[in-house]
Length: 336
Image (cartoon, rainbow, N blue to C red; front, side):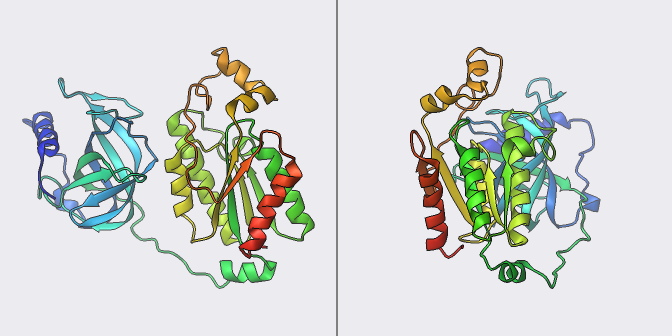
């Protein structure tokens, strides 16, 4: 990886930060292969770095996915002091813990400018969003491996006489996601199918009760439910997920957890004017009055899907007709 002006900036900063002190790099104790790293990052993108969001990373010639699992602190470029931070904005420096999609070989930046440096890319458009230097490998569960079981997804699917999949409902609050999902599960049950419905509000009463509605919490909300959905599918269930899931990056992250054909995105395409007119929970009214912050569609973005498997127009349609569209898709693709 050629050194460039961005890496020059990061090297220069670290030289000043560590001037007169020993390097924090634990070079004498570094395993040369790991999927958990501590690193310094210079963020370049106009959109901020959000912990737990999935990006792509390139280390020398090795490419995989990466998540910042912890933004330990950001570094003031003038004073070199450590500051608390939840995000990194454009041209900010931070110290982070990284989780990679697979193990990679590397060196600390203090040992090698090539094997100790990396670039981070946006998973959606492959544009470069940040660069970094590896400090050391984190000690994280190096002694675990995947345990294969006799009763696997294929066996469970045969037993249930169905092909498991996840139907991922996305759309604005008030678009009709929960209503359609509930009616769909009822009809699948009547057909003798084995299902599980995961509703956004319900999950926030338990598994995700510690999360709010900041961008970072929304990302973590979807990451957790995507992993749970994967477990449900592996158990042989047709899994119905009803979450706003406003960001394309997290919907892509969820999709990438599944095998081809297992992830079916269902976009409930309802105009915000219709959603707001319904407003059965009074949420839009509170958001408009400034009493409810980070509300999707008002002061928090909703990124519309671009290539959903199923798109349902729900301005004035009958619920039965919409549910039948989903059933027809499942039947045509041999899921039921």
